Length: 250
Length: 167
Image 1: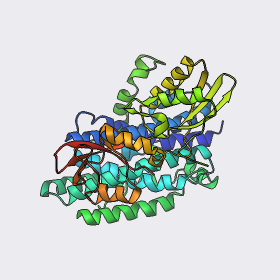
Image 2: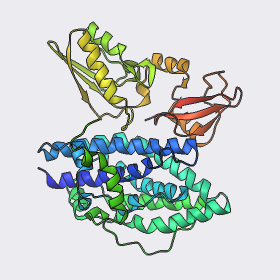
Image 3: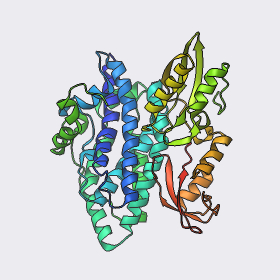
Image 4: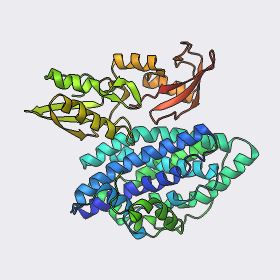
């Protein structure tokens, strides 16, 4: 099996899955019907992308692996998502800022992956990119509305940004697998992704009257499987059905 | 070469595929949606390639089952393959499909530039499916499904869905 390629697919899929799961927690709890539906639709898009990544990963892995076994039966240390997407929903400002920071990174990442030498990854990226454009539009518009809104919405959004922004650094920080995949022409060049992402963030924050926090980046290593305290709670929810009824199918 | 019309040599197979509809938009055949990408036949075994509209589209499994059922009724064994490339675009919805969407109460997708103007700049150009007025406004970028946005008419006050342009 092509171990590095498999690990890279986990890296791509796990970010979308854990963020998708966080958004799914809001189903029926959104602040308004429209935002509830929007956030769960974004969740659905992300899960759709995850299915494509994991179906391909299962093919590479063989050994009767399926998209479900990859999604639901790994231990926490085997998940490769960044700490940013694990952060809890807290309030609407946190949900929107987390989404915006991720989207600002996700879109240029997919723009790079469209040219991947791996045809399947390129096809998944080409499909996902159209959806992610809508996600970024949605989250940017809300960051502006909240930041440049009332005194309270501004304060809460700034607080969410101060909390979440230090975690963003990790997604730009090249892990050994990402480096190897970039060299092979399969993975993205994260330096380019970072430059575009930072530009988007700067533009939107300026318009939102929000300040880029001057806080040191957090040295976290979710991509290497070292997760935050939130991850165990996420997984106990996410994996419940497969743990309780192994190999169950819908 | 990607085209929105697919020529199928076998009439029975073509009929079967036209009879399958999108479970979320029951007036629309999957052929009008441009979801069927390739049909190959080897004796009685038929291979149908379909592509999802959106990655997470929950209708794909149902569509695949419905295709197999429709072909079985006509005496064909079939396999349905899901392909991702090239990615689906709203350009593949046929003229007929657009009309049917409008009649069903979903405003069909506009071209990319108009779509942006309507969704981002709040320009009033999406035609209300109830009264036909173009004085409409967006309520939410995401509607009842990921492929739609929710609009409301300023003239008749009724809400309606708009099928977003996907390119």
